[in-house]
Picture 1: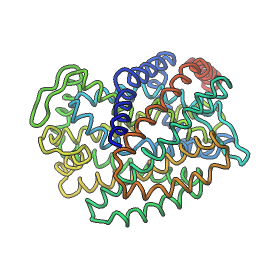
Picture 2: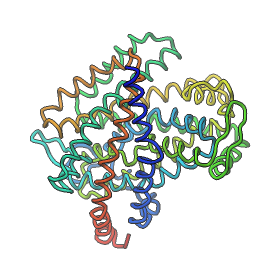
Picture 3: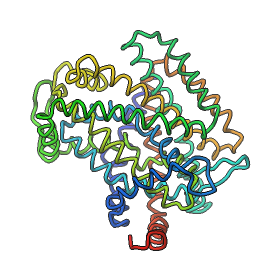
Picture 4: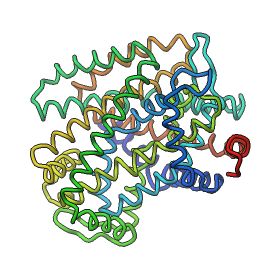
Length: 454
């Protein structure tokens, strides 16, 4: 077992390393941003207007309102990576790593726009009325039957990852936090969580979307609000925190406290890796949910998709980073794990409240991640086994939750992290090959619907 663990870790290091996913993800994002003439950046505020309009259905075909489809996607995206991932990047890469997280989010806006546009363009309807889409469908329907094998690979990778990174690891994080913070026994958390997950999943994607549409905005506002309060209470430390991000993005960060120092390349590597892990731009997961939107044009949902990386990384992750830098605990020798480091930082600047706020944020983020990834796994199984696989998947997915609460998950985490990364490879190949379709759809939409050039 130890040898297998080492092999999985080794392969995961290659996939997520500087020679495979990082250049592929960043390169694809840069190409798409140039191909779109920086539209995702220029059209950001109109996209938010589209998001608000998306609370109502904007067509006759689909399952979720555009807004709820986006929230179901963000339920899976906004997770422990926004708390733990940011701390990990700073612990290893120093403050400059945050800048490179922003770079991935900026480029990721173009990638997610294209993914979500393609998801709606090439989606299908199952015999029981489900709207299914995502990489496996735009590979099959966009690239043709000769490429279907690549869609099958994506679906296999996605189904496996949904049980690991989208289920058991999140359940484990919830259990650990509630046990440490409130002393709640693991078995009690397992029972409560399987009920809370089961109640939602039994209602299918509509119930997941409805719950996400209410919970995700509340938890995001709560976490962002807590960060803003801390920044206002420590206003004199805000600019030094921001300036350290820009300074150490392009020059070595010196050793201080328990921090051993960092080069620009280390800051870039770990900042980009953690940023991509957090916002999932290019992994192909988000378009699976966006494909369910009740919308009359693919580009409209693409606008909502490109907001994901902005909110996830540039807003929420930045809040975590600034609080950590304000507190100064990131360079301490006794900072411990990344999750503990974030909790200590929040509690340091907001005594008696900050630690509980981070713990509550982790619990809510992890719970909604389970709900969001249930859609991803279900749609992957429908692609592989047909629409009748939907209900059995939901049952199995729910029953796996207690295992995550009670088991040691080092191997599961490593395996799911590997498969999570493998999802991106067929997806990015398909997005690059189908990028002319997105460019054409975007050009036509802007000229016909908005009366202007892209």
